[in-house]
Length: 295
Image 1 (cartoon, rainbow, N blue to C red):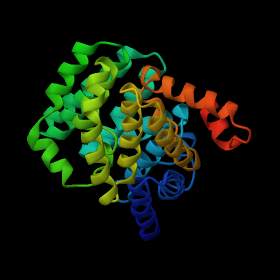
Image 2: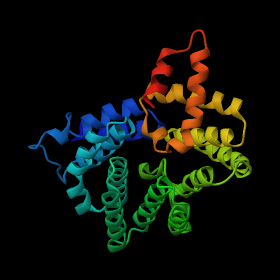
Image 3: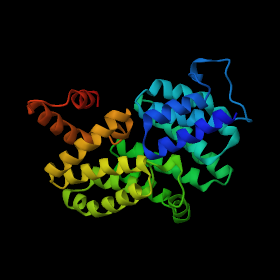
C-alpha cells in the first residue's frame, strides 16, 4: 500500500509539472503494474489508491494519443468513480471519455457522458463537476463550429466561487481546461486578428504565473495558445520560434493530445508553416520532423 501510494503521489507531481513520461510510468505501477483494461481479474478496491492512480494513468495514456487504451481504462474505472463521486475522479473520467467518443464520431455518446457528469454534480452538490461538464460541452460545440452554443456553455460554466477556489489549488482535472483557456480558445477560433492581438498580454501573464508556481502542464497549454495568438495576430516569426521550442519539449515528453485537442482550424496553419520551414533547412532535426508528421 505504501509503495502504491507513494508512486501515485509522485506520479501526480510529475503530471502537474509536465513530465508526462515519468508520470505515466509511476502511475502505471501505482495502478497495479499492468494494463488493467486487459486484466479482467484485476479490480479496484476502496481500500487502496488504484482507482485514482488508474484515472490519472488513463489521462497520461490519453495525452500520449492512445485513445483506445485510454477509453478502456476509463471505462474500467468508471463504476467505482461513479460510486465514490469525488470531483476530480468524475471530471477526468467522464470528460476524457467524452472527448474520445467525440473524436471517434460518437457525438451523441459524448453529450450523454457530459449530461451524466452534470447530473451527478447536481445530485451530489458538486458545483465544480457541473461547471466542468459545461466547459467540456463548450469544447465539443467549438469543434463543431457552433460559436453561439460554445459561448453560452462557457458563460454557464464561469461561476466565480468555483474558479476562485480552483486557482488556489493544484487540481489535475483543470490543468488544461478552465474558463480562461476556454474563452481564449473561443476568441482564437471565432474572432479576428485584432482580438488575437489583445489576447497576448493576458496569455503572457497567465503563463508567467503558471511557470512561477511550478504548474508546468498548464504552462505547456498556455505556450501553445500564445503561439497560436501570435500567428493569428500576424507575428509569424515569433509564433514559429515559440512553437518550435514548445514542440521540442512536447516531443520529448510524448504529448500529442495537448496539441490536437485545439483542433485543426487553430493549429494546422502554424504546424504546416513550421513543417515547410524545416523541410528547407539543410540539417533539420529528424526527431521534430517526425513529431510534426505524426501531428
